[in-house]
Image (tube, rainbow, N blue to C red; front, side):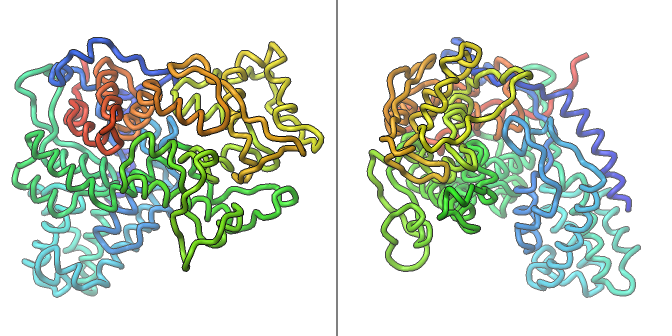
Length: 552
């Protein structure tokens, strides 16, 4: 079909655009220029960094289709898995579209069209009439209304004529067939699958820079905050040209940030940041961990989802994320942890001892994901803190080294078995950065449950944080969390992680450094929070900047 061919043509175009506009990263800590603190935000408008062409991820695709047609958002899972880079599913430089993508896009578009046509009220709402009646004026109104929402902007005259031609060629044997063909065509078109952005030339700044037009701003804002296309209110503001000021953008951002969808997007981002995407499929050695069953992984994933949602709703500060002595359990998960069952059915919030519980760092899903099937892993847990919370990962091991944890020995504790990592000079260079952090997690077994002993010996959860701005001795996860919360490097790394997700690319320019510094500042102080950081994102030059023309 014509649209499928267009999609395949755009595959090469998008790859070219992204390759030209988005480079890589070496994973090292972001260095913020001291000039950023004094620079006015407008001073970076000429250097906002690239704005790569972005394709809808499976998460975004399912939610967007659901809004348009009423299909279940899980339809996004029928697409090939998103390519990940920097730990996230929305990094534009990693995108590709295969023939399998094209085939699945067609299949899902047809399913979504069928769902929409089965809902008379939803279908009629796009043109204030029933387009399956065969009335040409009603079909034209449907093309205008549905096209505006599907492509997130008004259609131009040529696009409207093209969709009416699709209808004319397919409205046999019934008008409903023609309407279904319009919907299918629009939903597999590049204008839907990608987020092309219209721009307004800047009057002051580099001639290569441009600000987004209102509909592109609405689209970028909506996907940034909710992971789906603009709602009625945001589309109306864009149609009226009312998004050109910072105050107007922030007003819409504040409205969207109170929605359930903003909480869902925060969960999606944090799940990737904390490397928890596979928790539902986790498996453990059931001979060693006899309480682990087929339902444990999904339950741990749901526990974390509820914890993150509650954190967003109650005040998503770094302190809440890293130190909150609470979690969520149902009767089954409470039994798994050895906790009293909550009153009533379903899930409930439970308060735990601050000496044992410390926010995300003691979530069972996180602990189980950063462990082996048959034992804990000070390496994986320590590396996570270095790489994901401090943005200072240790170098990869030499290619000649076989990566294999010490064999489980019931006579030796984990600390005793891993001692060779730091006594062997060949290993110590890297492991002294990870293992002393990882040992603070030893009160939690490979399944994520609290334990007082290991190999019949009292657990030694002491460790040390080094080469950071929060160095010092550690004893257990709560002591680690307290140091991380006080760290400016953790705030900068958190801002860097959000920057990569929010802008779909790695940080690479001086302007990016200033943007990250502004985001990190929004996390600091008694009123700092993820909400404030997300809101600050909308104020940056990078958010309003459109694609830049190629340099001569």
